[in-house]
Image (cartoon, rainbow over all chains, first blue to last red; front, side, top):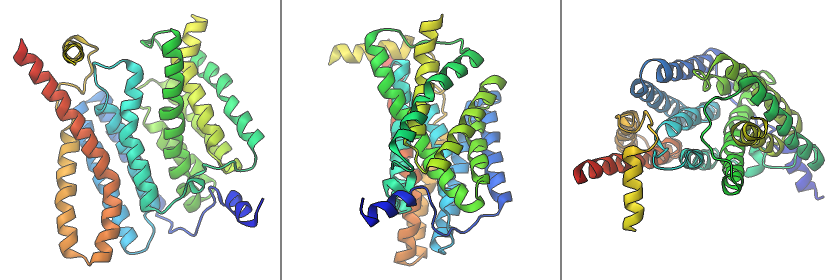
Length: 269
Length: 87
């Protein structure tokens, strides 16, 4: 391994000096995300959509102004991906398409946003944890943790609405779609970008901040789902932080989603 | 092709209901896109070239995904209207 490669490995998810945004401002943004999500599920989808869109506008402008002044803005830009994530999941799915494709439809705009954010922040793949980090075996083990985590999540949450069919085609297609658009893409957003900059600004407390931001988007899905999501987010965040890679946690997250939505409901019911 | 279109039209009408579908939930996205596009021009004129470039690189993160979303919303709406017209 060359010196450069060694440096790259150790640099994954490590951070350049970062302007630290006031914690109150970040807390306000996460509170606003929670409020918008609550409006979506409890008051009006339309009003919630508008709130998410306004929040997106504010976060983008905040990030842009800070970047012009050379005063950071990375965390605000990473937070701006969350309204995009939610707006996309609300608007992109087409009723005519099978449920499984909804994940892919909602994922495409988010993938575009992630690519543009990485370009705006001049990040390369290993900067966001797309590297082996502390070792391949460790990442493999972390990835496989998704199987028991998915089983535990299914037993605790017991999702009642299941419309993904159980056949060979959907089982394989579901695996690919969920690994790509839930596992890889969402972990890139939360652990690759948001947690990276949150940890840079606040140290290990950034893991907690990311977990809270991750959890508020589950508001309205029931208290059990929220608790399970928070626990999964915290574990994955800690593992990504310790191993400096998101490869394992992306696989684990994909396996959790596959287990909860497709595998365990059909094997255990 | 016509079979596919018919399939899509039938499912758009009788398929799984989705709360965002028939509503103007895309309103937020459309509004924000208009603001971002307008802002682009204002920023270009008000700031120097270098600053405007940095600004726009950040705004693009929201603009392009919203363009895709607005396109999807309009397409779904058009499909709905087409179906209503055919009935």
